[in-house]
Image (tube, rainbow, N blue to C red):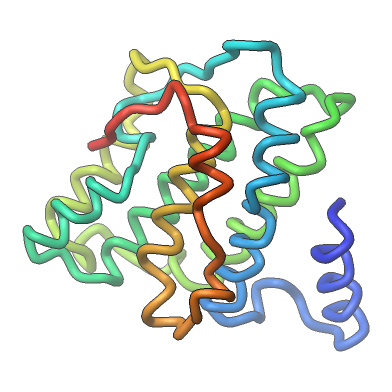
Length: 199
């Protein structure tokens, strides 16, 4: 487990709080830290065979361009964060499905899953399809439809998109400065590779 994340959990334990008790912005910030470039590079590229891909549905690849189109269609920011949560949770689940517990990336994927679980319980678990924009509700429904997975995507590309969209949706409402939200120079250097456009 990464030292920074472990330190946060230790503080929470001392205060007798659970991760789910944190606010949406605080949990999003923890996720952003876990999705830092060096971690993505190490755990979802270097620890996998060259050219390794996961099979996913088209809706499981969510890029900033998809968010821009949905915004143009008047989808609310809350709806877009709801969509991002479901896509991100699914991406991490795909990663966990292929990792045995002995794999060096397994604890990393587990910790990402725990943070997303906490975010879901605290902020998105009470949502109903009728609470979000129709276009978003349709994408989420297709995401969980169990349809075939025609798209091959590299693990790092899934998390690259997860981080980029997270910053796109949370930076303004959470009032993150440029330093807090980080930069994408590292992601561009390493490249996501193998990714594609989503629903």
